[in-house]
Length: 250
Ligand code: PGA
Image (cartoon, rainbow, N blue to C red; front, top):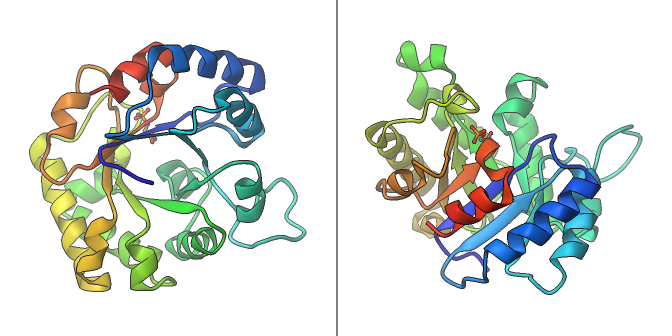
């Protein structure tokens, strides 16, 4: 059950099982259950079952993984699959995060396969899109984002599109302390919404569109008030349980 606004925490390669257990215990103290929003944590895969067990009956906190392989199973040393992630308690998965694309060379076509596989195995894909600084400076930002989106959802039908989450994360805003201005964010969110409607019909209005990139306690409210922003995907500022709880209460 996804209620807006959404608050998604991407821990990246931080908080192994011992730290994750302490983090979650603290977070649950700082954050009471709310049914007017959706909170999800994306710990490293190695910490997922610890977070799941520490969460105990606080199932208002959803769990996700940061990546899956594009195939269901097989000889892919070091990888995790959609059905394994689901079995371990994940209900969401980040697909095509900027670090997957730009550090690990992941393509739009791979993102599309992962989106389709996730949908098939009961994981809600959180398809991440966003342009680099060079692309923005060349006036190419919209074209890049539209292409990431168009290819990213082209292996699933309109009903599945309505059940995904999109995250707009300009690459130049991730981990840099520079957020998009409210005008830039709202312009790109409008482009994404229009593109989704063209590709998958008005039912796609059910798919929330998150903003991500240097969100913190000080700017969360402003960004959440931007027209078209349905929630936040947060990296660095989600690593401290008290600060993250404050953002989740925005
Ligand atoms: P950041 O990361 O909040 O640290 O900029 C966001 C993300 O990569 O999802």
